[in-house]
Length: 331
Image: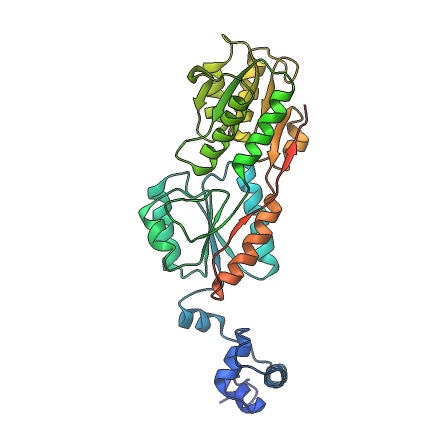
C-alpha cells in the first residue's frame, strides 16, 4: 500500500475522535437538532474539521431513499409569469446548494403523471407543482412525497401545502377599477373553467359586474386556453363586429393575443379599447405599457416555497399561504 495515500475518513473515525456515538455524529451531519447537546455538537464539528471529514451524500441519499434535489413540474414553460416563478425558485434553491429538476407538463394530466413517475425513480426530496392539473398519479404522489401547489390549488386533493393569492378578491378589485372608468360593453376572455384559479377570477369579475348593474351575456364570454394563440382566437371571434371598450383576460398571455388582434383591427390601446390581464411579469414593464393587470408576487412565491419545502422535508405540517398582490394600472 502506498504510504502517501490518504485513508478515507469514516463517520466512525469522527465519532472516535469526538468521543461520542456514531448516531450523534449522524444527527449533527444531517442537521437534526434532536437529542444533541450544544457540547456534543461542538465536539463533533471540531472532529469533522480536524479530520477533514466529508459526508457521503450519495450514501445518505440512498439510505434515506431521497436525494438532495427537488423537482418542479410547470404547466407551460412558455408562460412568461410561470417562467419568472421557475427562475426565482431555481435561484433560491441554488443559494442553498440544492439542484432543481424541471419538467413541462403542457397542462396534460397524462404527461404530468409520466413525469411524476420519473421523479419518483430519481428519489427527489420534494416536488413543486406550478399550476398542477388533477390526475390519478398526483393523488398518489402527494401521499408519499412532500409536495407544494403553486398558484393553482386542486380542491379534490386537500391537505397539500399551497402558495397563491386570493384570485377572487384580486379579480373583483381589478374589475372595480375597470368599471370605474365608465367603460361601455365589456368582453371577457377567461381561462379554463376546470382550473380553480381561472374559475375564481371569472367569478370575481362577473360578481362585480352584477353588483354594479353591468349586464354580461354569453356572447361576451370566451373560454380560452392560457396562451397568446388562444387569446388571439378569442379576440378574433369577439372583437370587430361589437363595440367593446374593455377586455378582461384570464391571464397576461391571453391579453398579449388580444393586443395583437386589436392592432390588426386598427384599434388603439388604450385609446379605443383597454386591456386588463392577470399575473404580471418583469417583461411587462418593458414591453406592455398598455396592459393593466394584477401583479402576482413571483419572488415571494419562490421564497415561501423554499421555506415551506424545508419544513415539509423535516416533517412539518402542510400550510396554506395566501400572499398579497398589487393592482397595476398602466393605461
